[in-house]
Length: 185
Picture 1 (cartoon, rainbow, N blue to C red):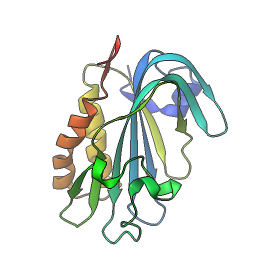
Picture 2 (picture 1 turned 90 degrees about the horizontal axis):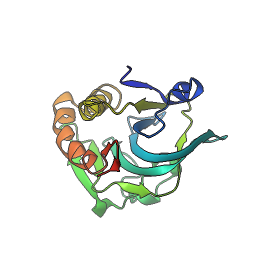
Picture 3 (picture 1 turned 30 degrees about the vertical axis):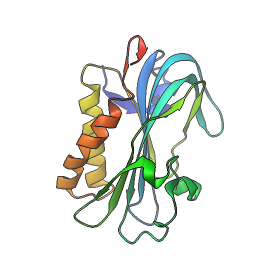
């Protein structure tokens, strides 16, 4: 079985998990290394359908956000919750774990997952953005953390040593949104 598939191809092929799983969407800025990660765990799926914005899941979900902000980002003084849609995550600065890399970039990790009780939408990737579904296997945690490490290092240009260190706080928040066959725990 595959560990991950592109989300919209999996939907078209009828291969999305119908009970529980994880979806990682990565949004890249066209002009910098500003990168926004949205990882959603979902369970108790009632329906999945496509609209013009993306895939709508009528399901419970928990979202983990990670934001890589390059040094010198012109809007760093604006709370992440109040930035433009392309740069926004639903947290104020005081609700984030903050890490400064050796290159002076900042990485923000939401301290607590954002909970959705009835539905959520996975946006259709545009341009260089991507979205992957991770299948709930025994080693899904390690697979997702390795995806974070490689993507932060290679696409968001976080130094490799910092990307490794960031797996600890990301893993701690990930554990708060883990799912099992019976749903969330």
